[in-house]
Amino acid sequence: MNVDQGTRFGTWGDETSQLMYFGIMPVMLNGVNTTGRVGDLGGGNGLLKRWIPDAITIDQDASKEPDIVDDVITHVGEYDLVVIRYVLHYLTNEQVLQLFANLAANHAGPVLLIQFVNDDLEAKYKNSVNETKYFRREHELKSLIANTHTIKTRKAVEYTVGAEFYRNRLNHPNPTAHQETVVGYLLERTTHALQPEQRG
Image (cartoon, rainbow, N blue to C red; front, side, top):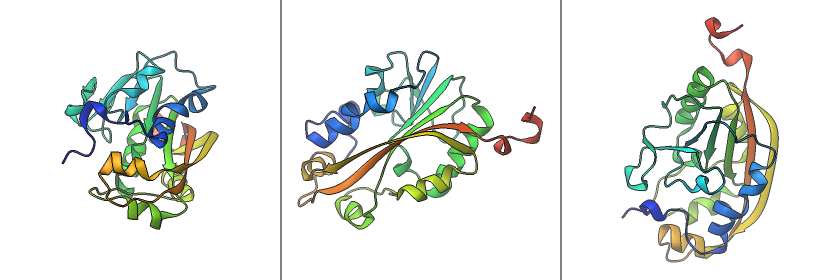
């Protein structure tokens, strides 16, 4: 079963999906300069283009028809802004560290990280059927990026994940609602994250 549902991903009609993939985006993008070349790492089927029409989507899942099929962990491109939206729960801690180390080495501009975090990990994992994911509390997320990037601004939207979300997303037979928070970090790479030859 392809739980990500190709180009239909994120377009489900339940309230949680509509909030996560559409409703909160004006909040997360407010004050962020998106006028240059924008790389949408792990952007799947390109939903970000609704707000940033020229965003370049990079994803390893060809069924979602991204602009570039590549591994986001090691991808290198020339971008003024990199957006990483709802990607990190697909990655182990080691892979997240590798992703941000690669960004620190190859991307001088800002990174907009949009990711949900969960205080109640038990409830999140109970609803996460038919998939392998890596869910985190906010302090755990922060610790993974602290060595390479600094959080310049933080935004947060708290909401209830409705049971219908898990029926649509994962065909869960008996899901339960729970609380969740999406955080938006505008990141810049830290000086000590650069290689010695990169330091000015």
